[in-house]
Amino acid sequence: MVTVADVWARYQELILSRLAPSTTRSYFAAWRVRVGPSFGAWEVGDLRPLDVELAFASWSGAHSTRVDALATLSAICRTAVKAGLLVANPCTGIERVRLVPYDPAGRALSMVEIERLVAALPSSGPYRRFVLAMLYTGCRLGEVAGLRVSDVDAELGVLQVRRTVSPGRGGRMTVGPTKGRKVRAVPLVEPLRPVVSEAMVGVGEHDYLFPGPRGGHVVSRNLSRALGWDSIRDGIKTFAPGEEPLHFHDLRHTAAVLFFRAGLSAPDVQAILGHSSLAVTQVYADTRHDAAIRGTAAASAFWAANRLCQSGGGESSSITGADLGI
Image (cartoon, rainbow, N blue to C red; front, side):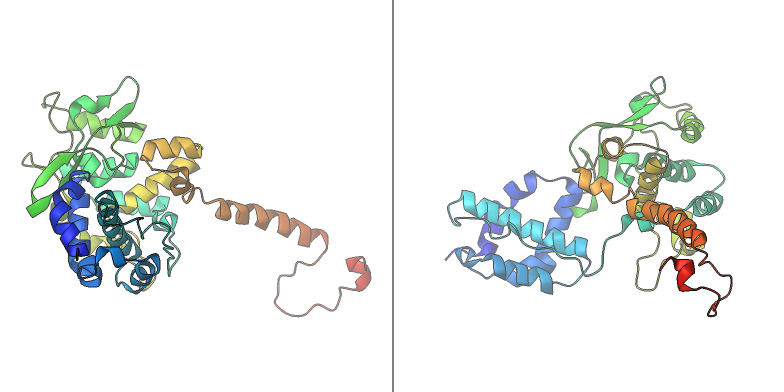
């Protein structure tokens, strides 16, 4: 009998070799907390889609965490198919229903909240530059940490995003390809230009553009500690009870929303953010919100034309059927 745990143990290095370092850590955590306890002892040939779907529905944690676990199990099953232990991957086509609708645009900062963020940052220095770079580019934290001076194209007004910095096994920082494994360009917007110019003073072409004060990589942990993030973030933006507090990744959500407000097309925003599909980008377009704004004007004009607007909340006895045209 070949179990799921046997496949994981035998082919682990092969499975993980295809992943970015940060994703590797997610797979280890997924196996330890969810996949191993749920399916480790199962004979791999006994896995069925309904069993996987039931496990996905019962796993605890955030939706993204459960998706990581499903991805881990799916990678194991794909390997088992190649090894002739499975006919088909039972993870294919699993319904991944969210209990709470995902609204990344709702995580974005408003212009007032952006002003609060900027005011809460140190008046100068590497940590201020780092946060502003995340805000204006929409890059992930690790991508900003991976930018080099040579990635700046001031003439064209872009930054080339070629790599990301992330903790690998054992917490050691590693430099690897971006999440999409592609090089992309992001706008070097006017407010970011002086920040970049300041960062380039006295450094070499291949030095990192936004290092920490001692020259090392900035990571979420040391950035939070340096800014006192836990104590200042609620003064920038708060969320409803039960929702996560403000995260650095919300600056990426903010940039996405602002790119749309600036008039960029969905394909342009997709290319800038490096999304895998246009569907991912479209969630930031806020078309429902725009429709509501247009609807407010149109419906208000309709009610005004039919004399149905009233300033109070009481009943009006002056409206007759003739007024309504019936």
